[in-house]
Structures are given as C-alpha cells and as structure tokens.
Image (cartoon, rainbow, N blue to C red; front, side, top):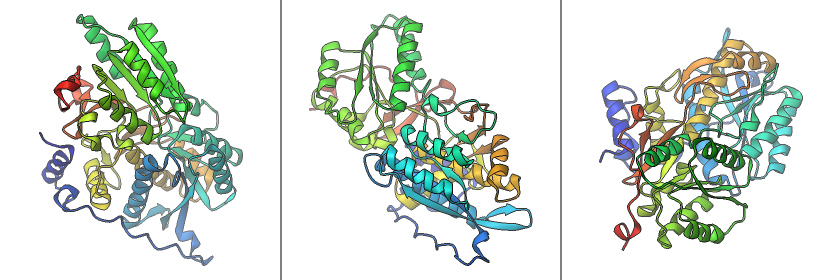
Length: 426
C-alpha cells in the first residue's frame, strides 16, 4: 500500500515542486539551527516584525504543541528566505517570540498579558488548547492586539463583533465527528445494530464535542449507548468498565491529553474490547500511528489533507511544506502544524496589505482576508472563523493515515467495521 509520504513524493516529482531529497528517502535530520537573534540596535530593530507565540513548551500539552512550534519556525525561515514581508518601500524579516504557557490557563493568561503590553508585538498566535486560547483572546482584546487562533476549536471562542480581533484558521468543534455519525447512520439504515458511546475530556473543546454529539444523536435518532465525562486526571478504568458493560457499536473519544489518548487505545487492545468503529480526536498529535495494531482502523477527524491541491504564496504546493517538515523533523506534519504555518502566512500577507507595522491596520487587513494557503482557503466570517474549511475523516491503515471521507476526497474506502481482536492479536 502506498503511504502518504510516498504519495506526496510522487506529487512533488510530477509537479517539479520542491526537488529536495524527501524525509522518507533518508534518515531523519535534526531540527534547523536556531535563526540568529534580530539586532537590538534602535536603527535596525524595525527590520523585523515581532510575532508572539503562546505555546505549551512544557506540561501535558507539550507533545501536541511541538509540531505547531516547529511549523512556525520553518515558515518564518521560508518567509525570510523569500526576501521577507514587503511593507511599501522596505522589507522586514520575521521574529517569533515564543513564550511557554506550561499547559495551564493561569500561565497562558500571564504570558498573553505580557505580550499584549509590548508595543513591538504586532500579533499573537494562540496555543493548542481552547482553554488557553480563551485566555489569550481576552488579554489581547483589552489592548487591541490581533490574535490568530490556529487550532482552538471550541465554538464559544469566536463571537460576532463589530471590531474583530481574533481570527481562526480551523473550523469549530461542532461537526468534527459529523462524518462518523453519517457513516453510522448509513450502517443503521442498512440493517446494522447501532449504539453510539461518547467519552470526552472535561475542557472547552471536549464539552463542545459532547454537546454537539448528543444533539446530533437526538436529531438523527441514532441510539446513544452512554456519555462519560473524563477529568484531566482520569485513570480510564471506569471508562473501560462502561465500554465493556454497554458495548457500543461506535465509540467517540476526545481528549487533548496525548498520553490519555494513547493509554485508551492501547487499553482497548489489552482488554480485547471489540468495537465496530472507534473515532478519536487528535490522532496525529498523540502519535497513534506509532502504536501498531492497536491503532489500526481507528478513524480520525482532521482539517487538512496535505496532498490536496492547495497553493501557498510562500510554500507553493502544500506538499512542499510536508516534504520540508519531514526533512527537518523526521515526521509528517500534523494538521495542527499546517494550521499554525497558515496562521503565519496569513499574518505576513495581511501585513503587506496593511503596508505598515500597526496593530489596527493589521486587524483591518486580517478581517478582509480571502486567500489560498498550504492549509487551503482562508476566508474569515463575521465571527472571525475561517468559513472555507470543512473537516475530513482519516483512517489509520498500515501504520499511516488515509483519507476515507468525504468520498470525493477519499484515497481508499472506509472500513466501517474493525476486525475483532482475536483475528488481529495473538
């Protein structure tokens, strides 16, 4: 079976884009060396535009946050290598100012407030977790600092406002699992038994997933098996007991905690708990493809297919971004990484339209964004969300990810019923 990486290489070769030795043809390379710090002379400081990045360098969200930071560094270098950002008669380079929220809302609030008070910071890219994004949004809005919400998907993060300061690259959590429930409805219509279980972590994103799924189950008439809320310190033993007792045909599991997600997937295999379809959020961020057989046939909602025909003003075809990321870091970029990279691209082009380093002018330019990026189309609606993005569904197959829904974008057909464990594990 062709892997995603091999397919990407084929696209690159055919298009003539990015004729570098791809990551899958050589050993993983170390991350690029840190770029030189910008000069501190008051004469030269304006040759740089400073973009704040609130991220989880440490704590429970450090693992899924890392690809976002890597993608931002890579894209900043790409912008600089292209000559920088054109501001009328001069060019400026990109300086990323990373601060660590330590995976806590308190530290995210503190760091966002510090960035907001620095007049040289033109915009902030928000962190991985919706809970932290909320803190960044509130602190930035107090002083009029544009925020790019690369990943946070809780619906309550974005509101319709006369003067919008936060702009989201991805779609809201509402609808993340829509393809899963559509597949379940088709199987039920074909005569298959169907009961859906839902387990989600108790945070803004998880609660949005839970509320939407319960509402959709009521609307479609698909029977609910159970709904369980997981605390951040849950040991999962009670969830395994519920799954074994209720035996859902479809199970939706959502947690921002990568370790919890991996433990749940491996626990199902260890306990030989059979489920027809297991849908999990954040698969790539948790590295589920590395788990082998326990992760096979899991379906994962995503917002980006790197092999789709996406163009970008700095990266060219999106496969160029994929290839460069793999060469630099020895792994495929997550869709969150692509969203982070697109956030910086959008800021750069908005600054060019603004023509000056001014927060208010940048906000106006961001609100008018309508462009193509490596992530796909970006067009902000009245609430600041990207109205052009739609979720996809991937399935873990052969240790990689294959797009299976919607059908017009599928690489392979969806396997709607996972083989039982006795046929998969010794």
